[in-house]
Image (tube, rainbow, N blue to C red; front, side):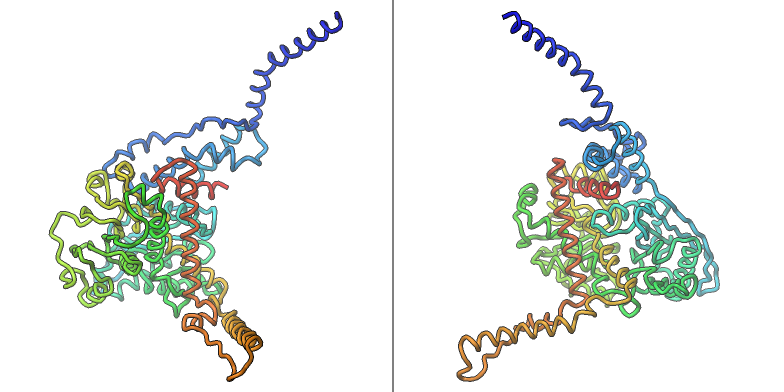
Length: 546
């Protein structure tokens, strides 16, 4: 009996000792950074210099991009440390320091170049031209981003657009860093000869400073530029600094087809806008959140800006079954509640140089056509078109940011509170950079897509039809003659395999679909509701971080 009593007392003493040591063990575990079931609270906050941005009426463009970046970092901090750094053998305190360091490296612009050079005008006068090129991140090379000709070009704008390109490329899994360039000119005020001299000189200035090259920095068309300017840049590079580089044609994308371009590049951004909207408009969950039914049937839309992006967006949205009721341009707007024919408007624009006076619609006489009721609004012109002052007047249920930065942070918050789905620019206008990636690969590989497999695939499909015919004749006999197996018109067209355009369209469609799914999953995981922009930034930051 005494022995049993002593055994109970010893057991009780061991239990008390264990309970006494438990807090010390827990403290030791936390100091060693071992992962507990409840993750520690993140310590990141929005920097003080950016805390005014969510309420600002006219924030700086780069400030807006930085704010969205930090907002995503604050939400994703614990996930980055506890999941993405799980294999790092260090205490949590050290992981936090390292994670914060990596995020500090990601944020700023790595390099920005300003150039000033003279140009001799056709009238004999000289003029100084100012240009910029920003390289935001070198975590992947080359840097990628367009060249725009606009009087609004400044250092802040190219830095913001370069940062946006970094996150955009990461968002759609294109292995480039972000870059952007611009010349502070109005291209409408210069002759073709003057524009060629300006473009070629700018290309030389960029190349001399290491801001142009197929493995360093690869520009593309943007506002005020197109295939013509890209051909001038490629030719200038190939005949100067890049004359010994067999990949010289890959120094820019968006070139004409006969000079190394790719089919589908011109319409790529507009086609990407269509796919981006399509991926959300087919989701019953998101359509219910904005009070819409899934699908394109009966949907109306308004486009701000009928340039390259706006034009092709109108084409694809109309083909899908939506109705264009209004279009805004710099010199006037048109409105027709019964629908505007994009092809007829394109023909009119080419012939007259303006959409004003188009017979298929009435001139818009209201304050701003963006305030009219529609299901989808596509701002495809300039940044900050929707801001704190006018966001509450937008009546659309879905806003597709075909332009870069058309919605300010304050407007973004107002629209979310109204139950409007804003599909962010870094995703929905990524069609251009996605197809630019395909063109860059084509130039590096020195072979067009499908060329090596056309004949093989045609013969394989011919053998397949012959095999089907033999099987039918073996089963049913050849009484009355052979049994012909004739391919349908659609199958016959595809017998030779996918053309370059087919491959480009398929690759773009897949890229946009996969990215949309990833953003939706992140929005659900982080309980973000309609805040797809933050989900996109979280995905991008996570990919760059790792």
